[in-house]
Figure (cartoon, rainbow, N blue to C red):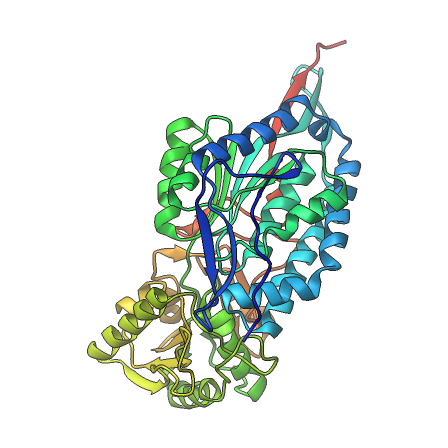
Amino acid sequence: MSEALPDYDGLFIAGRWQRPAGTGVIEVHSPASELPVGTVPDASPADVDAAVAAARTAFDTGPWPDLPPAERIEAVARLATSLRARSDELAATVSAEVGSPLRWARGAQVATALGVLRAYRSIGGDFPWEQTRTGLLGNEVRVRQVPVGVVAAVVPWNAPLFTAALKLAPALTAGCTVVLKPSPDAPLAVLAFAEAAVEAGLPPGVLNIVPAGAQASEHLVSHPGVDKVSFTGSTSVGRRIGEVCGRDVRRCTLELGGKAAALLLDDVVLDESLVRQLVDGAMAGTGQICMAQSRILVPRARYAEVVDALGAAAAGLRVGDPADEATDIGPLISAAARTGVEAAVEGALAGGARLVTGGRRPADQPSGWFLEPTVLADVAPDAPIAQQEVFGPVAVVLPYDSLDEGVAIANSTEYGLSGSVWTADPARGAAVAARFVAGSVAVNSAAPVDLLSPFGGMRRSGIGREGGPEGLAGFLEPQSVVLPAA
């Protein structure tokens, strides 16, 4: 198992480590060993006040929001350079505190975070920061893009580096200042942004980092000094944040839950590569990602062969120590999380589902919150496990009789985050993908995300978009300067 990680005794506020106002401490435990791996201060509402004040001062007095965009873009690029030098350390930290298999942490956590930061060099460079238009009466109108202000960026435990980068890169490029709040379950890797911010030369107060629990988090998202909240997490918490922001007419972006479908068309070639991609799409990150394609929809004529292939592939995944390079599936984040996933599986079986593989705690893992990769068949489309986000290594395989029915099942949940279509004809796949009610749909891929394009949800999967120029626009306010006609 992973060794203990460094402890933090300060909060990063106004460009330096500061002693917290309170005495609370967050003890981070490894979900694989159940042992402590590090500690950070538990920020109090007073600490949140200090962080917001620092961000407010940095925004209101500058120079950050007044710099030319090109200078901010280069600062974000330096942030990426600093983090890249810590890549191995960051991957090990995420693996230890989240339980992500090291291979997955290195790629899906660290590499994607660096990719987002680098992407904003081209996105920001091509962005229309100011346009001149001809008004209705022939006068000149200058449309400027100005930063929204102080941003509260609240990130989850499951992909802390990637989600933090999705907020920091566009917010900083836009000229905003940020109070970044990592989850108390996984704050250690996110704190690496503090050292990187100093090395990148960000002015004091531009980035502040305050790990905190529920009380201080609510204080942050309702703080009168915050102009926008950018949140990634559960739909239930997102709904609460939306209510708070709506009350105060505060801008917000909410990237919430999902129940993605992988729709196989009747012409799909069921080879080993495709089966592995489907399993990875459902169970990568131990299934603890919002875009997990945990519903696999299959033409009824091919149902038996797909179920058998998926069951065999899932059973072959290696469950174990996330620090082991050979591990495919790590632990769930907590005992409560595992109990919840087990309850969902048991409920499905009681409702008539068939257990193809998995569903048990691995006998060779005496400690940690492990669960075998699980595949369920004969699940009704309206069953709770086919409708609700499980957040674990569980895939359900659903048959359909016509393409219209398959698309209807894909769209039958309250969510609309992502999905995929699998076919021998990509053009046909694109036409079917366009029928999904989802923010991002991939054709013949389990990764419906492109770092130069927007990502976000429809329905109860959220409001707004992250990534691409649309993500940058979310941290800007258009301002029209109307000049008199000559």
